[in-house]
Image (cartoon, rainbow over all chains, first blue to last red):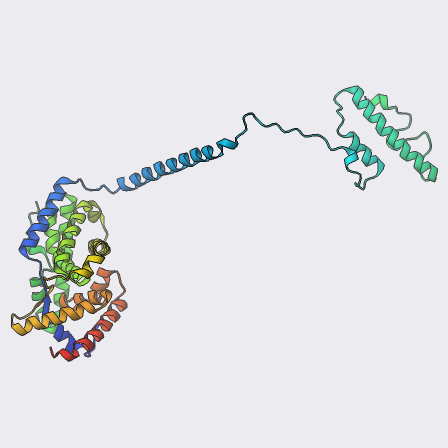
Length: 167
Length: 216
């Protein structure tokens, strides 16, 4: 590329009236001697070792940082730490505490009885009987209205079946 | 040891040889440039071979190939011959320490110039304060002809170049006193060709304005 296109000829000629100082022989002897001395002393860096060294330094630094963070964190919360393990006890919600729930009597009954243990046969029988009573109460209400089945018939159990046969 | 050819003859860019390649008629300019490029490649191959053999003679080869160019670059950056020589020594020591990287480098020139730029920047950071306080008594620009008037001109030119912004000064110095092409300067300083050319132009415009009244 012709940079100046003639317009800088004069200033370029002017600049050429000087020149840069060249490296002297003394400088060469000094620098080459120093370089040779370094060559003899220091083993050259081997390229593949450099990333490994960086990796090892990074890993060591990471372990140090995490360990010190854990240590100082433990030390900082030590005064407030509980002496014995904390236990949490949860109780089933009581139906009386939820008067505003907009459910029908049957659902309210189910909610009320859901917390009762039913691990043995007698408990299960009692549970079914209470359900049946609730249902019977509901049927009687419907019979009084004239829209439900007969007095002795259940909607859930087949005719003639007894609740004892399911236990 | 490197046996063939001798280190003193292998350097393509020693100032004397560069001057000889430049001194031909214009018609031979392209041929001279090609010859210079060929010499450069040959020198690079020799340096690589010596580095692969872990041969300390690579120090001389590196000196012959790079000392002139690096010293010019450093003088342009630092505006001080003494500092430039110190930094040049640091650069050579660093190159020797990293010689395996250098042997494996795809572009030898780029690697060496990168080290030189880093070292110069590091030196400027370290010595910023002292450099403002003390001036270098040793001139880094010397008269081309040994006349009394030539010395005055060299001093005036050095003072004007020192006032230029560093990025422009480096390019003006390399182009004017090392006869580098903009492509070579771009490779040395990691710049595009157009950036190098425009900075050179801006630098010369400022110099022309400053030196107009001096009747050099």
